[in-house]
Length: 199
Image (tube, rainbow, N blue to C red; front, side):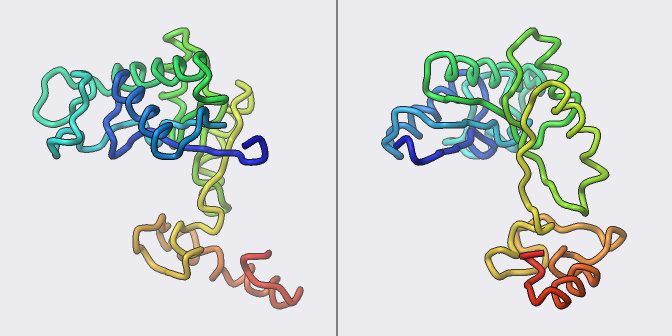
């Protein structure tokens, strides 16, 4: 077990909120059969359409998005984060973090006086670098590890796909749809007898 680094996430299709996150941790524990995870992240700062399915309704009124006057996005995030802190303090998660959080979301945690995430997982590639430079700088200044995803510019290309089939695509104004198709990257790859992915 010590040789495996296991990361899991809570939400966004599963309900957010304090008790719901604790239930998700129990589910992870039971399904995967691990006593602890090395890292647990909140997948997305909002819960999406929670309540659209009877099996996917948060027990936290602040997190119930569908037809609910008590829905409070910020309170939902903080309740969710409190559950994450509890999972860290009780040893289920050796590190806790967030994914796709922006400056406002991080500042909410600071303002609430809660421990900061150890990790913020964000899209990280040259197409998105400028839009994420401020977030990266903030995280580094607070001691939050930036963990990048979609290094090729899309999530589905690694599976042999292309286009917008469930992946992150970028507008034409930032260049080719994928870094693997960028003329500069392709040229460098050819000059070094390598693939664009290797470059």
